[in-house]
Every structure is written in C-alpha cells, then in structure tokens.
Image (cartoon, rainbow, N blue to C red; front, side, top):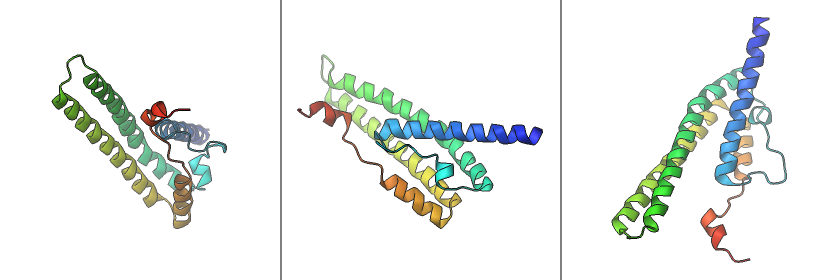
Length: 152
C-alpha cells in the first residue's frame, strides 16, 4: 500500500510541476500551441520511470529560480517605467534601471538554457529530437509594447 501511495504522490507532483512549468512558459512566451493542446512532456517524450525521477529533480530548482527571477524582472520593469515617466526625468536612473532589467532578463535566459541542458542530459537522442521539434514549433510573438503600438 505504501508503494501505491508513493507512486500516486510521485505522479501527482510530476503533473503539478509540469503544469507550473508550462504555465510559466505560456505566460512568458505567449500562446505556445494556439490550437493544439499542450502536451504533457513526460508522456510526449515517453520518459521511463528513471528519467521521470531525474526530470523532476532537475525541474524543482529550475521552477523556483525561474519564478523568483520572473518576480524580480516584474519589479525592475516597474522601476524602469516609473523612471521613464517620473515628473523629473533623470536619464542616469533610466539607463541604470534598463541595465538592471537587461541583467535580470539575461539571467532568466540562462536559467532556461541551463534547464534545457539538464533535460538534454536526461533524454535519449530520439527524445531530444522530439523536444527540440516541440520547442521550435513555439511561435515568437511580438512584445506587449509592440502590440500596444500597432494600429488596427
């Protein structure tokens, strides 16, 4: 009975982690799979039990780091916007805020690439190709600023 509970718990945690990861990617990159349903990566890649455990271990810290850095990016974005629209414009403050935001965005990109490298080390060559294809299918969307300034 204990093994069944552990297995159920493991499946639940795996699905929860994947849901969070996909929600973060969805929010950050736009509608990744607009008409198709988002696949569960473990099923899509056909990971075996050992790979699932490794995958979960790799993504635990990743999700915490990603969420923390996303919150820092949001705060720094607010600082930048407030500096740009302050009653008294101080360009040095604007440039410092922009540079801080760029560092955080670069850090976010590094976090994602480190995770992709960890996932690469877990996956077989066929699974890597499947994940690569899935990631390449994600459309690149214009930024919110571009969308605000497009006339329609």
